[in-house]
Image (cartoon, rainbow, N blue to C red; front, side, top):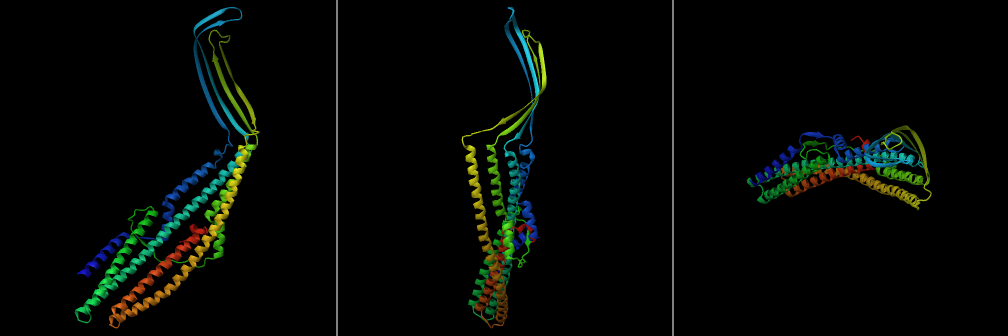
Length: 440
């Protein structure tokens, strides 16, 4: 009865997990596509890229003139006493007058020390920086999603391996109980088999829980419903033809973090030129077309007057001394530029370190995987032989359990080594700036 409860609970939990996962086959290509389409960071970087595109437009540089229009009206109602040169006096109560005006004006900066020009070039380079930031965001989204995908693959294999272990342990328990019932063995062997079955069942339940959690994590990264059902492809291939020299060269040319650091330094050089432009004079021009009409009160010499016409002018301004603020800004910008140059070198140094670590992890992972696969073949053969001898009564349950445990251990080691090497491979591709170009 106890054995039946254990097996039933394991089966029921397995059925629940299978209902969660056994539908759509989710391929690595699907994961990459959904990560790039749904990731919040990728969407925000796309919006930031559009903002940068708007900012680099000629409409945002000050190269175009400004045009404005104005109009106004005034009405006056006064009591006044007017004394004229001939000695006469006129007294008016409720004298009214009015005036009206309208006009259009144009203002244009002809020269500002080339500040606008360098600002325009800087805005264009900021757009390129936004492109690099968007690429880095997409690389991180793909790496995180694929890492989560391979974690689901690891947990899937673990669940399948432990299901086989539970079935083997259940068969062993049944055999031991039959042997005890026929008087061929003592109760101790049956009790040991039951303990081992309990252990394997608990391990299976824990593995199924880990699998469910891994799937929820992947669904969260892909912005899918957490209970979305799918299956995972656990077959992977390695890009064993990758050259260390080629990858490292690509890293120095294409790595997103390094390119961003270089771009920031380039932008800082434009900032120096923009600040230097304040040393030079500025020249602006204005043009205006206006219309004015005045309706005067009875005491005025003219009853009304109207004027209209075009006026234009130019203004040259030059700040000869601003208290040293421009000099301070230029010096500080130069120092900031020097810091950004150091940041480029620091980024290179860190990338070289990360690359060497990733390459070593990749090579070590591949070596372990290949070596452990040989161990797995030996462990499988040893278990098969032990199982046959156990059925014939030539080995005891302790030796049988040891062979089973050895097979489980090596199987788990192979799985971990395989997918750890694959994640290290992804890291190399990310460092080299080739992750988005990879066909998974």
